[in-house]
Amino acid sequence: MEGNLQLALICIGAGLSIGLAAIGAGIGIGLVGQGATTGLARNPEVQPKLMVFMILGMALAESVAIYGLVISLILLYANPLM
Image (tube, rainbow, N blue to C red; front, side, top):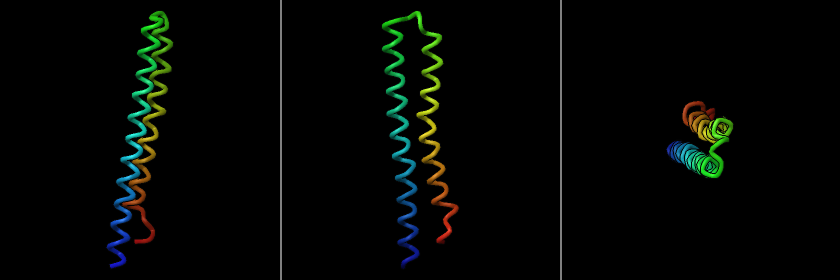
């Protein structure tokens, strides 16, 4: 019985880690896109420079989701307690 409870809690933790990381990444990418669109609407001449920073910001925000995926995979497949 204790093994089933432990497995259930590991699965819940893995789901929460990737779910919350994906929410955070989605919010971050949305805010980066909003800022880039607003900046481009105010000053269209800075489009090449703004695009570089927008792509960099989106990549950094997406790395949060990758970290959540790695944590969930570690919880599911590299668990030393099982």
